[in-house]
Length: 68
Image (cartoon, rainbow, N blue to C red; front, side, top):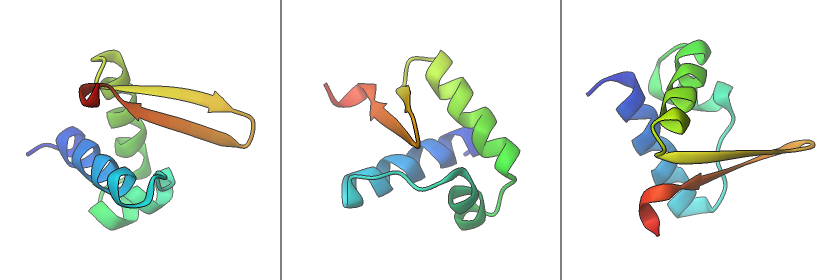
């Protein structure tokens, strides 16, 4: 499993449990990868249509597209 799949699965699991996503820093620390890899994974997941990222001042919302 590459880091993109790891990030996706981790983010989805956390969202299902808590309803909120963790920060890039927290995700990187939990998965033992670089923050840049988390950011790149999110970008690629968005480009692939697997997630939708909505930036709101002081908050970012992430929606998983495969749940609909």
